[in-house]
Length: 356
Ligand SMILES: NC(=O)c1ccc[n+]([C@@H]2O[C@H](COP(=O)([O-])OP(=O)(O)OC[C@H]3O[C@@H](n4cnc5c(N)ncnc54)[C@H](O)[C@@H]3O)[C@@H](O)[C@H]2O)c1
Image (cartoon, rainbow, N blue to C red; front, top):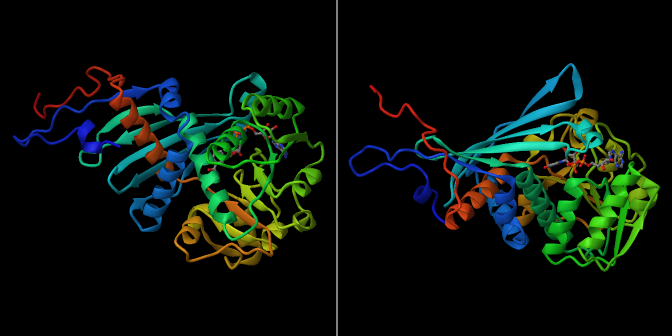
């Protein structure tokens, strides 16, 4: 990766800063920069978690903008800064409008702004629904790897909710070496389940594909369960469904009843972030009045401070950290710069002399 300072505004020898530039990076450019790079991106996300764990980040709480007239919709602001050789600051601004899906548009849309570490100047605006899905899927694949070490490696994956995020997670699992003998699919929408099966076939999966009409059957048939629904409150309530001790990637955060988490080992990406906004772990904290049910963060596992047990279900609930968007966004920016395809907006910053 190139150093941030080689492509962003920097002080000149005279003491005057070079004129800052501003680039706009389209979804197609983002896709090109990221496609087929699953292993590299999982490593990038692992590095970001380690920097975050070492305190080399600033990642304040996300801000949720909600609307009385559109109760299912929200727009979330995720400001963050990450250190390390590719240090960068920035903001992800991501909308979730679930009714879009019925109108033929994806639920989520987003932009990511990158700010220069030294001057604070924003230097790029990137289409970010792909970056967001990518960092979420890379984090899920990383967790599947680390949390299954020392346990029997899953061979039967079940996707509970089969939208864009589920597709990206499958791509990242497949792209980082997971080879499943069975892929189970469950969705309240038969069209979504069918569309997902089409994707799986197109992706060339050799696994046996089963659409489960019953949520219970999907969970029982899977030793790796991926939750990627848009449920606002728990709808899976029976701990007995998890008696085979699966690894659960609880990416949509609000599907599992507290009883299930209380019978499981629980890992999160960041404790303060995850115990908010009525996520299932937040509900457990409200119910029990403590955080004793948490076994640690994924970074604790990576650093050897915590280990997933073999005799209980293991649940990973990632809130989704802005620092992950930053590292993936910066990676895209550097790739597009490297190929000479940056589209700079002429004269974006206009008032650059203090007295005109
Ligand atoms: N934790 C993170 O970092 C992170 C990041 C990005 C997205 N997400 C979450 O991932 C989820 C999925 O996002 P997406 O873009 O794929 O959404 P999407 O709308 O494209 O797909 C969601 C799917 O879930 C299905 N569904 C809804 N309720 C269900 C239920 N009770 N049982 C089974 N299926 C159900 C829908 O029919 C739909 O097919 C969202 O909740 C989103 O907030 C989490």
